[in-house]
Image (cartoon, rainbow, N blue to C red; front, top):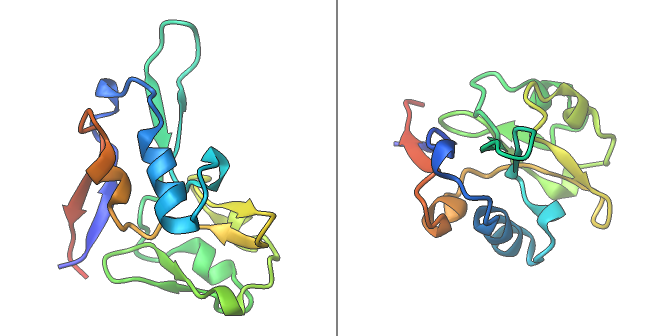
Length: 136
């Protein structure tokens, strides 16, 4: 059964950014936080908690529909898979994402898209993230 990333326990987050570092290292061979598909930031103010911007695994992903070259294809359970060879870096997927979780890697000229691999979940020291089984 396919799994998708969830961030239901962000109240436990201390802002260590281990999830972001893990995502960037595992999926992009880079330790730059900007290369992560998960974005953790404060909710604002000095005493506030943290929030995560993640792919919500749409069943009918607008990013895939906006892609003129079919570089983004639906994955089982929701969300998309990037076929890098087909991407022309038009950024239409960035504009189409309803939660703003897709951003560009201007060095490689490809969008950074969550694969729902769960690497961030395994490394989160506070169990803020989880993988949820979903139907196809």
